[in-house]
Length: 475
Image (tube, rainbow, N blue to C red; front, side, top):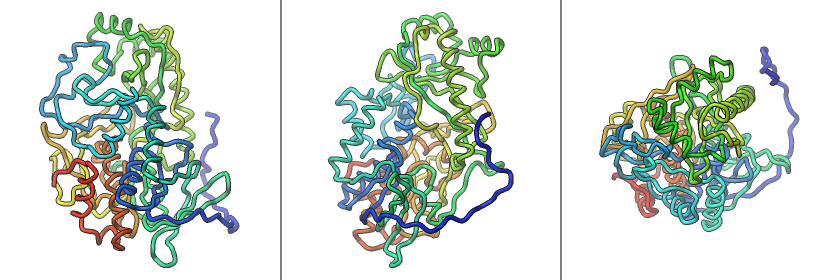
């Protein structure tokens, strides 16, 4: 594999001191413009704070747009469990196993969905979509940009956070960004880490965990891609003729075995998985898998990107040569960055557990809800574990999961909040990330306003503001 390997013997060198350009000060600095980060910025601005959002790429959206993680997964509970046999329309290519339910996430998420639906950029969640939300990533980017414009949030793009220092007077943090203009620092009263990987929290000295307890392995990475000029009617004919070969969004087991026997396909997963998008001649393919890699290692990320793109080429060839409906198809876009499911989980004042999720536990300091199943892609190879939240129920995420231990004036949001490996597999999905992001932004803004750290802020004050902003909360 022609990638630079990590040296076996660690060796450090000391770099000379360097000046940095001061980029200004704000009440709330949000690092990361993904689902959690943009929701945090909106929530903080709506609460009245002066907000800066810094993003490493030249656009917003994070995993939704950078990694093409499509669709938005269900944020509804289940009053009725659907069965695969109820699918009916074999060409819909959306989940068929999520029954009737009601949304447990609102607020910024629905502001975004209303905007997307208004310009044809997504399909609304319904029984027909399995309560997922297929979306167009380019319209997703533009909709977020519009929301930032209207909120008054100031943005800095192409800025990668590389460190953080406490301000001398204890009034907040100075975050260091690597940019084309050299290092830039921004001072803030409160910082919200929406990086997904907990990069800023780790720089601030917050403790964290990576991987599962028994071996430290994290869920695998996946490079997603979009395929255009797909003939849905031809694929539907194949599914009708081979009903045992497709289950809603995944399958093709016999064709895979034939391709493997011919030496054409070598994948560490057992099936092909793809989803419909708002465009009838397009699908989003979620079938690459790279195990035993960590999103906090540049060496692992390099290997994962290389491996996944080789897998993409195999899958593309397999679809075009063996799967009806894909004869004229082509890959129109792949993720700018491989999709990272799991990396750092920052340890907070409370650590959410798998038991909390599967017991639909409630908390007095609830700031967000989730109903997505425990969904663990095997860190070692093929296979996926799926365990559902009790029917008709949903679980709470407490504010304490957003407050890193041993730190002040710092909050985390999205998939790096405090939880176990099992719990993380549920709350990592983007609608829940938006809910925790909005809550972190609100808490950050109130912290600045009242001059107390997040721990000194009454949780009911955060809940009241979230409800004013349209969030869904069971209080």
